[in-house]
Length: 262
Image 1: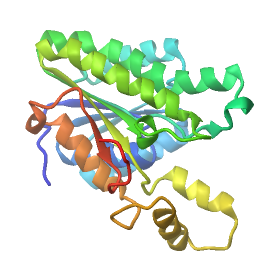
Image 2: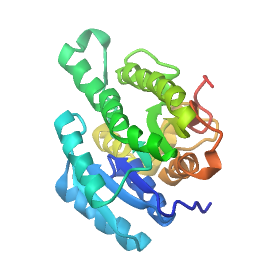
Image 3: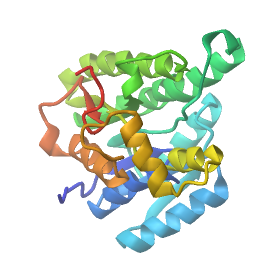
Image 4: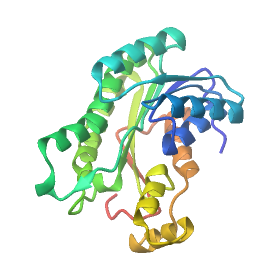
């Protein structure tokens, strides 16, 4: 589907790989002025060049550790000065940290909360005043299905992702009167760098295709397959567009039907 985001400035965290890269590309193809941030300078620059090549749009890229509040503040000031006020924020940076509860130290909990929850808090706090003033804004937070249906051995991710859902609802209530819409996406198993790393570490001799087919069977995905990054990116673009003008405070499952919770 074609989305029109012309003249909108879209900021994507974790924009150099996987879901962030796919969404940044979709935003650019929809004529948005795209800004990507990530920690790895070389990877970020490679992503910027590739998105620009494929979309024909100018792409801005800024190195930023989203767990560092001072870096977020400095980079956001640079973005506003060099690109413009942010209209669309896609909070995508994250990882899939998980272990037995009794094995998790305070440091592990704090690192996960900083990466997933507090990065969302800080970027939202940066963008919302301008969105409120202009009476138009979109914030989309990535969580996963474990936020709705946590299982054993899924902390700290399942807990921090659930906190992101609560934050989404709070921000939607406060942003709603000003036409600032805030939603989240609970993502299931998607082709991503994380999934490819899982395949590499499995060391079972299977091909990537065999590995992902087994994953779909293991998790009982009703659609019978792992999702594509473009399928997730299309949903993000919908939530970022005027087509979603009466959608806020929701957490949409993009998971092939696997999550037992609505």
